[in-house]
Image 1 (cartoon, rainbow, N blue to C red):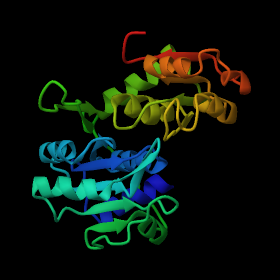
Image 2: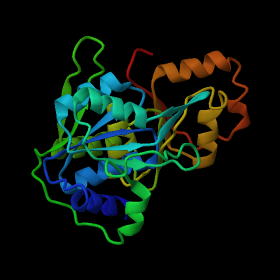
Image 3: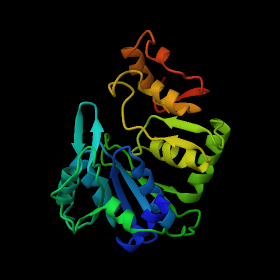
Image 4: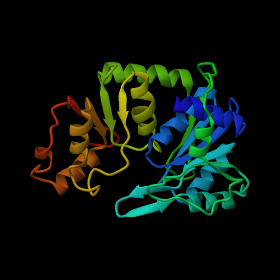
Length: 281
């Protein structure tokens, strides 16, 4: 329902149409997934930028993908600090000379509520959602319709935009989640990544949801939020089938809790596997 209503907002308020690009600059909150799925619903192409990037990196991606609008949030949370997003967005748009580009903002009322925004440029997500009672139907698209653009990190030069199509992405992820990971309808899945990376696109949003499973969004780290028991606490509370993360996550948990005192505190019996990806183990 929320995805459908957000899709209607994109069409009616921001005049987004099939083939338009929408840049998403958000922390790990469910509204980030709603934004991605709302774009897919109307055939718009989303480009998610990792919320840890500063204004110059955000500007590079804005310049390249030329978005119709930006979806963002008031802040993101990191260990021991809060990162306000609107100053970063404003600076990036200044660099890109696109200061009139409109933005949809998720105000995180319990953390940071921005009160001095230009309301002609920053439209409030929750206000628009409250005013939108009905959603919009899915727009049929060809299998080779672009689903998203995701940029490389830029550590070896100018960031390169990787384009994934709709049909190939959905078929491949459905196959992988079933045959490789044995994820079935009704299961729960936890990927300890971020939607700003391809792992987040494939294994937090699209892959699990295509399989009809519950996916866990986690805005935090393996340690320090608040301790090395963070992953195991999630397992006990939500009972995921598997954990999918980088080897570094397990290494840092081991470093901070070498004797495994924290894992002993929680019921991890739901876990069938811990899957490591993205670097050498």
